[in-house]
Length: 85
Length: 365
Image (tube, chains in turn yellow, red):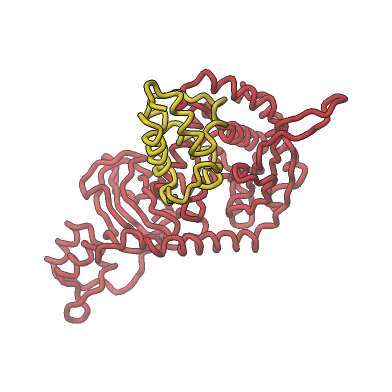
């Protein structure tokens, strides 16, 4: 998967959790939880959604790297086998 | 019609999920009822055979009204579900033709609730069918939902502030041990089985409520009625605004894994609008967690007729003195809003101390 595809997938997972969010208004560099008002349960569901879609295991210690959409795309690019960088 | 909230006066039967003649078991979901706050799956409180459905889909009836009659095996008919049933309106007997009566019985339409359009107000076959098809209820007036929820919250909170003499206590709890234990546990678990600190706090509150029963129960008819079971209601904010606080049943007797599973399920269903009647009507104490928003301290308003609400703020590393050094320590501010009619500050203090003590031994939760 390419980075834009991973980014699109992350947005798809987010849409299930925060259906009212407008992806066009997300600043990819800014804190995602703040922008979308995600609580810790939402965030856990987001991580579970990524895990289910991609089969990647995301340890809690890595959560800090998932704070922005840019960070998520980069992190997944490293984790997903064969992802184009 | 079960009471699904302190200030619920009536509910609309949106959909029956059973028919006359169906066999049901205790706990089965038999109908969907729309309240001002949400559509709720109504569970049946007695097993047996559904004899008659008394309320047509789309009909709005007061709390306590008979929804269905269920006959247990070899028993006389029992009324279900739940809730004290007021005497039926003793109006004049409905005038209806035998054909209309037969059709009413087939469709489970209560004649006393059908307004007749025939001669002298008599009920015709088409009145019955119209009543049965229910004017096709607004499956919850969607545009009005958030205004209706606001009204329901307003009514409950106004009643709370008017009737309940709140007292407030707060304490700072060291979460170092709990978070270290949780991090080690979660590192061993697949992502789907990870536990959030909220589950730990919920369990600690449930166990503390068992120790200090004055916090767990209801103020009703001028006296405190403790609850034998601990069913903490978990405050869940809905994404389009509003708030529900459905119960997790017997939280004090569940493992953290089980609690976490239920918490996830409950948050998902609360937001999808598919809560069950027992979850809506059973909470014995409320827990609210606003720490994710950066709130330091919660000053809660009790949900009547409950007598206590526990609030948790943000978990953060704060500089604290330990022995002779200033160290970064993860702490949370826990607060109690309690009903002074049911308990005094001393017991409230013991309750918070108990939550603190329990959170120092996370492995025993």
